Image (tube, rainbow, N blue to C red; front, side, top):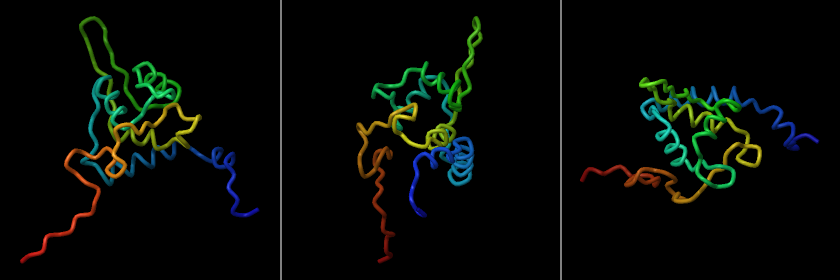
Length: 142
């Protein structure tokens, strides 16, 4: 029947790597000033926490799960390096993480993560303090 949705067909047609590339390109072109480097395990885990990304059981993410995502699901992170006194931290960017997250088909059981809503304002989301999603009217000259 034309117009009928088919979940299996939609999932089969979902190409995450193509979607990830398109979303990253769009973010980089439209919001280049908002991309920030995330350097080190702590910064990467903190960013995922701010986005509300949790383990499937609702607990915070440990670093080992992020590394598993890198190995098995293409999470965009450069692994850190430590050999003797030589150290180099892990690295990714906010846009790369957002593109990876948005390329998933669903946050349902098939996704490797859950999205928590704790501490998120329903109107402003995770907007910085003092900002508002309400449209602002331009000031009139008196």
